[in-house]
Every structure is written in structure tokens, then in C-alpha cells.
Length: 172
Image (cartoon, rainbow, N blue to C red; front, side, top):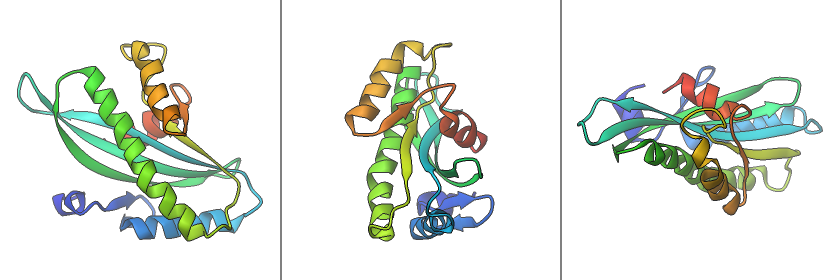
């Protein structure tokens, strides 16, 4: 992805290439409408990768992915990359990832609902957080799950957080 795409906030798709948010919504809506009686999950997850920076402060590349999954029949996903500066610790990195997912959800989900115009198939909305019981992030689980649930979303952590741990991670 080029810097212009990052600067202009374009989304990426393996299948559809570079897209504006309106196009992502059109593709997700079309996927939901193919089988309106199916059960869907709409998953938002973010992962990050450290970029070289100063010793005391790091820059990270944040990749937020949105996935629509038709239970038992596959799905589609789209992702967007932004850069974040001045990350000093693992805690700040996890907060930046979680906030990126929450910010994405707060703007994207209302746009999707508006475009579906009340004809919503049944879908579960989940925010996937890249923290788990095993590893350095275990002490942060309650904090970041609380951030997500406090904003009205369902939070999933590792090993169920495939939106962050696998999909977004693939593009960091």
C-alpha cells in the first residue's frame, strides 16, 4: 500500500483492491444480502507492528480489519493501516490497538446500519483484542475488555480474537 492510500484513509481487500469506506460498506451489504437468513458475525480487530524509531519512543503501524463472516460459509475482510507515534510501552501499544478498533466501530457501524436501512440480517458485532491469558498482556485483559464493553460492544480476547491475532496481524 502506498503512502497516498494511508493518508487518504483507503481500505484494502485481497479480492477488491483499494477501496473507499463507501465501497467497503457496499461489499459487506451485498455479502449480507446474499443469504439474509444466515447468521453472521461482524468482527473488528486491530494489531500493530513496531517501526524503527527513537530509543525512548516507538512508532507503530496499526492495522484495523473488519470481517464479515457467514457462519459455516466463509467471509470477507477489509483492512486499513494508520501510523501512531510516541508509543512508550506495551500498555500504550495495546491501548492504541483497542482505541483504533473502537474508533473504527463508532464511525463504521452507524454507516453500515444506515446503508442497510433497517433490512439487517442477523449479525453479532464483536471487537477482537490482541490480549490473552498467556503472555505479557494478561494483566491488561480486564482493562481493555472494560473499555470495549463500556462502549457497548462484545469483546473477544485470545484465542478467540482471530480478527486481531490473525487477520489484522497478517497485514501489519
